[in-house]
Image (cartoon, rainbow, N blue to C red; front, side, top):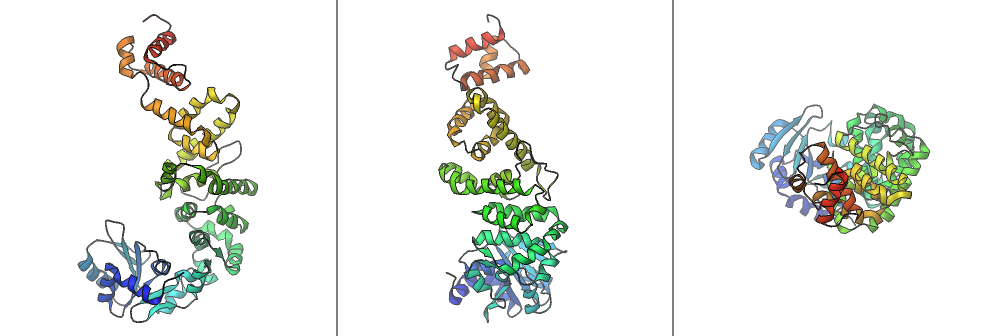
Length: 406
């Protein structure tokens, strides 16, 4: 249920920054875009967007004198931002023509609304009705042609609302899907990550694949993408319901490039190829080295775990050793949550084994180096497999593998 006009006015002006901007603006400033959309949904956004009629730089300087913060100017976008330490941003831009002309150039009807103290909500494209119906509707085809990234944003917004795209918008995407290749990889990556971070991305990835957009971003065969999306759906509806509360808390944390840990699991799944690693050069994404490395490790770990299924007790330590922190990803994606107890045991042993390196050096006389590292690793594996369970047995084990009576 969306907020009433009285509730909207109260929430907008109760915000300190909005109150200052409208007090100083007096007839020349409008609140626009996502902040208005979110206010209608009862959500308080950290980002406020305004269009200013008049001298933009002078107005921003006036606001800064009253609010503090740091000024950042985006010359290519014609926007000036005031940023604050707690993540709040105020973005000011000059309108493109009249207010009506400016709103007509926006992406979707739910983002083409404005608010002004004297007139209240300005909704020229029936955005309120679409928001009520959780429906993403393009303002115009020309707007999508001018910025093809809006095709991917359509699915992202639908995922955030857990809603749908109207038929006209999907039909336009089907005719323009190849245009996504004209968009920078950095921008595509940000939007895809926002989609993967959403609660139920599988449904909207399926739409994007059906409309031929996803194929132009992740250059994998359709059958592999279909299988991978089904795996993401299983992750959403089955696996995530079985995990512990501490892992659920981990899923919400940021991993890299604003991708949450939950989003990372979805990315690892959708880029997975059967019996091989995904070619990360053959995608229209810009991934950080941290994410690239994680995906490679996880895909290898999944193959190793699958290959070890007949000799799991003998191979599990090596799977964990090779996968490291990504072992949790491997277990979740492989639907082997039954092995979490073993991974916790492995982690505990790696952090603190029966014998420390100093103790081994003291009783054996061996010098620090590769030989000592190899011994520690063998001892950790023996402890993991419960072949060693005491200090006396650990000392005997070290002597045995050295082949001498120390």
